[in-house]
Image (cartoon, rainbow, N blue to C red; front, side, top):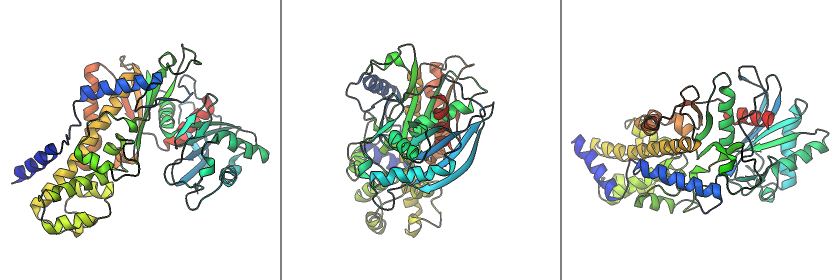
Length: 435
C-alpha cells in the first residue's frame, strides 16, 4: 500500500512533466555557464551578471568602526560594526526601525529624511557607511545605487530612478555630517561577510548565496571576463551579482507553468519560483489541487484544497515533515492514511527538487569562479536564508549539501560552507571599510 501511494505520486508528477531530480544536472550546469557568459558579455541572458565594483582583495582593518545600514524588507536596521584582528565583528548601538513606505506611501524627500533621522544617533561613530540595499538597483563605479524599482510592497515611487547613496549623503550633510556611503545588495553582503569570517583561514575565492524568501548568488569574477565593460582594469577582479533567481533554462513542468500564471510577475524569476520560500507553498498547493482534479483525493479533501486562498511554504513543510501535526491548515482536513501518504509524497517532491536545483545553482557559480582546486585554499561560500536553514522536509539542507558534493568533488573543487549571523550588516561593514 505504501509503495503503491508513492508510485502513484511519482507517476502523476511524471505525467505532468515534473521531474523531482530537476533535470540532467550536467545540462543545467552547462546552461548556467552559457547564461553567465552571455550576461557578462552584455548579450541577452536571464542572468544580468551585475558588477558590484567591490573586491575581496583588500584586508579588513581591525579596530576601525563603520556605520551600517540594512534595508531589506519591512525593517531597516542600523548599527556600528568593528572587527578584531581575527575578523570577529562587534555590533554596537544597534536599532531596528520600520522601513519608510511600508505602512503608507511616502515621497522621496520624506523617505531620505527618515533614513537620515535613523542614522543621526550613530552619525558620530564614523565617516564611512556601508548600506545594504536589497532592492533592484544599478550599482555604479563609485559604489552608489540607482533604484530601478521597488519590491516587497514598498510605497515610495518618487525614489525610483534616484541614487540612494548620494541622496542620503546629502541629507546627512545638511545635518552637519559628511559620510562616504557604499551601496551593495544583500547577496554581495553575504559574500563579504564570509570574507570577514575567514580572515584566519585562507580561501581561494568567495561566494555569497541566499535561499530565503527569494534567492540569489554572488561570486568573484576576473575583470577581463566582464566583456560588457571597457573601463575595468583587466588584471583586477570584482564581485558580480548573478541575480540567479531569474535563470530561465531549468525544465519546467505544466504545474510550474500553471502556478507561474497565478503570480504577480508571470514569466519572471522562474528559477526563484522553483526553489525559494516565497513560492514553494504556492507551487505545492498547485500540485495538490492538480492531484485533486485527477480524482486522486476524496471529494471533501478536493473541495477544501480548492477553497484555500493559498498555502504558506512553512505550512507545507510542517505537514510533509509531520503529517499528523495538530496545527496548521492540514489539521482541519479529515484525511485517510492513504491521503496523508499521497499529499506528503507530492509535497516532498517539491522540496526535493528545490534542494537539487539549489545545489546546481551553487555548484555552477563555484565552477565559474575557477578556483578551489588547491585544498589549502578552498572556496568560502557563505549561505544565508531561512529556506536553506529551516526547511525540514526531506532533510533539505543535508540534501542540498549532498548534491553539491556529487557535483563538485569529481571536478576537484574544494569548498567550505558557512553561515554568518547578521550577514547583511557584517557584509555592509566590510564593504564600507574596504571599498
